[in-house]
Image (cartoon, rainbow over all chains, first blue to last red; front, top):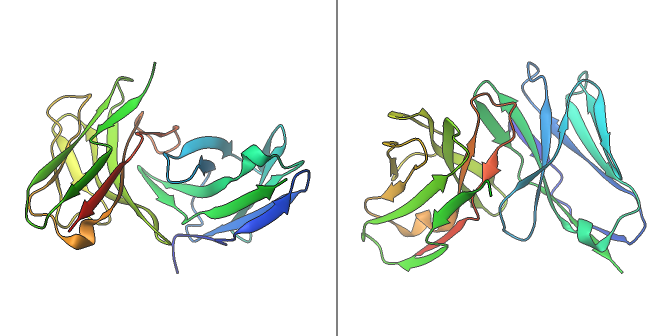
Length: 108
Length: 113
């Protein structure tokens, strides 16, 4: 089993829609998590951190389910600018494990 | 401006010709690392460094070397590049501790013919 697994998508949604996708992780000892955003093979940038049960930042909500070992990201009221690949990142001691990413395309 | 820089951004080379990709950060971070990104595989760590003169292998170190003589610089060296090292490479830095935000350089797209 991979350390971090994501549905690759693509998720193709209209502007204004809500889109959600999950990330599963194998290390039950992981305490917190990250979502990074990557635009078209550019460098990844931190979108949000996820501690305890979840986190909300504007239109973005991340939730953590420790029992089932998955993290979800929900984007409300999608904008064209939300089109990107979203990377799930799981810290483990000094190391970060990256998922392969979920691609979201928002269409006009 | 706080940033991680990499050079070159694009490079096409031939098998066996030694090359170096430079990486520099201006945030005084202790931790630096190199990743390669290939379609469907995500970011895989090549080497990392916890501080000056301290380096260690990541998940895919074969065919690569690194050095950390100064805190701000962490070059990636391919002594004898091969076509399977064609990839997108990212340098990154952060404060020690995996729960800190990691900052990435803009990437180097390498093609080995």
